[in-house]
Image (cartoon, rainbow, N blue to C red; front, side, top):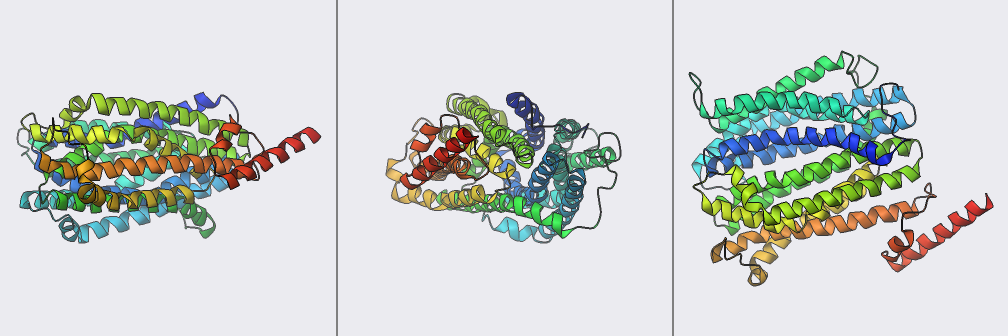
Length: 504
């Protein structure tokens, strides 16, 4: 335990912050691979960006599968540490890593075999976009076992509270990627310009290096736990909790990724085969990732913090940790809202060529629409981390999946039935382009709904959990927000807890 952070005592704000900052930095490093690709490829052309964006949906889907071992490892390891059971923590580590190898290799094989079929699902008319996406995805598939295993290895370190190690390891890979990305994309000396193919090779090479460094560290003094045996026979009693916690998160994220593919198809239909809206959304999603990656970092930190305190039965710290993280995330959401709404042109212009004004104007509209939901999105992600930390991953997954599925009917309703009430954005869009924004309004509305329901859901869980005998901050105000039947139950529970404390 001497090298593992004890989160069951001490200042909550500083602990959350110290956990979150390296995780956020690691997330930005991982996100930076795509952003750097997009930034360089934007100088090649918007069609190349659209092709890589298309392929990225599949990479995203594979990353979703890795939430099973990653989230499962973070929560199960942290809860075991909270119970002071290090043998159990080591067993969870070994099983999460083994599961990661199996899933990543299997997914890579499937992507390689069905690349053409996958690309055809988007029904993009441009042969150049389709062919570029095909080559990019084939190359990336080769590196998927390394890329995805790195995600799980980072989760194992996060679960022990050693969040700085994944950051430094991934940062080394990013630096290498920054150096070789433009060389392979545009060419240098005897190296020919390879465009999107070069970007894929650079990313795979960098991730392979990161994987090698992680394997080296597992054998040295920077290992997450005091063992040198990180691989072994998979054990059902440890795999089951990992899948139980990570499975719903993976299902939600996978549905989100698949839905993104469907929405891309819907947008293509609304845009009548014009690839520009897809390019805008590909770039815009990378920009928005600045917001949700930051919130996700605090969510992961909260999950580790909550996991340890749940294992130690410290519900007072679980509650305080939730509200502290919620406050931080809300401030971040407000900053993102201001950034997207007032400085959308400056941000979006970093990712496209200067001679594509139509793409820039549509990108500004994308960011303005998404700005309205940034706070709610941050609240949703924070509440998800809190639920995961106590091992209840199903509620946020159900709400997330339902909310994401609603994006499809929202897009059609806004595009066809309610198109006349949509803002015209006359300064940026032609009248014919307004229906395309229906997809983005659907994204915003669903995020608002998910954030609201998940926040209330976690409050209800805190009020009704039999092991929690601590009153919430401003509990009377929270109770007043609940439906009548739940409000009455919460008041009764509060009265019983008060009577028990007075008797003691």
